[in-house]
Image 1 (cartoon, one colour):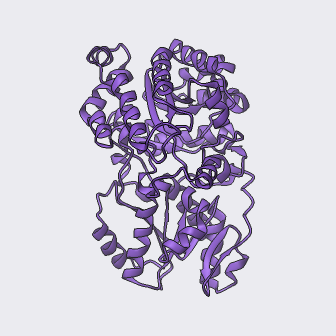
Image 2 (image 1 turned 90 degrees about the vertical axis):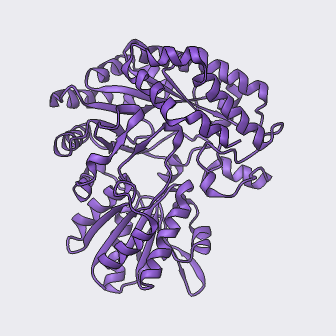
Image 3 (image 1 turned 60 degrees about the horizontal axis):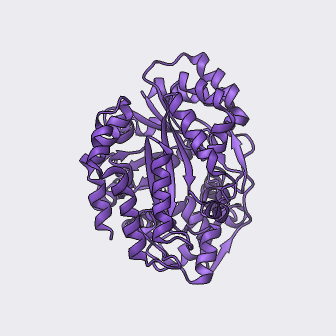
Length: 475
């Protein structure tokens, strides 16, 4: 077979709560870039079914035409079935094609996934660059697969898990993501609600992991509870590369925790030295306590293009925050929102309902709290027991999980009841959160005519996308 690998981003539904958007296949771009550098003799293509508007049948035709030796894909829990279907199609075209899965879901469920989806040959666990390269080398050179760390696969009726691979120490050693492999599609990537449909949208990875231990979060365990950042210079250089080479104006930092304290001052100086055009827009994800501890840096980053910050406020209840192991305090949320608003940074607060102790009354208090907080934007999610999280283990052990269809693990479907609320009642409460926040005629008029351009765009987009109608249909 030819020395070719096809990375596939399958057809899938994106999170309607965030409106209409089309993100680049970031993980595949990162893996493809590393593979391209380490194995230059391998021919690489990326099939982005979203941007290229390809159907399941188109995938089959594409694989037949390209005739790859390897087909690889990466997925989150709600997209696990779509990824498995890619493997099924590849095997249908040619049973000799080697299918490789990676990403958060498959890393946390390797045994279950290999048993349930026999069309998947190998699962790359955790950080994938080095494992993928070594796997391809081992198959091509016919050496011992078990020498490849971070791998799971079936052999003679048994599931084999090789030792965990150590994390890459220096993220600066990684190449820039392979946007050149999807250059014809870059113009299609957008985030309508945040930046408008015609604003070029790219994704930037500045760091990996998190040192915190939130009980509902998959990320920290995936990265072994460590936080590693690229250097300030490398991040600024990569922003420049994405901005100038591919026209990226809206750049979403994938970092789960931006961490102003550890790298903020150096990074601000590096970005400022680049003198980017005024149309650059940076999106960060930060903790409320990190914002409150670094108000001066928050202001400085606004000067260099940070227009939007998303924070996991999660709850009004100290008891629930302890259950979630967030390590933040309620006053942090008020202070953080105030700091962002004072600096004309769009404040985006995330909330979670559906913990075991939640009642209609406690969720109403959360709604009241979220309204009182004064953020520009609020997203309400349902507590979802993602495989690999502490919450999943507890929920599974105690029989709380009532829906095992991973396609519904999107934080919009109620997967578990609480002690006093059924799943349907939790779903109703989620709808009430959005209805109260975005269903009021008075609030909508205020939002549509807000002095803040981003807020005007958001309210208009929410209305056009009929988000409330879609949420009501879930009940």
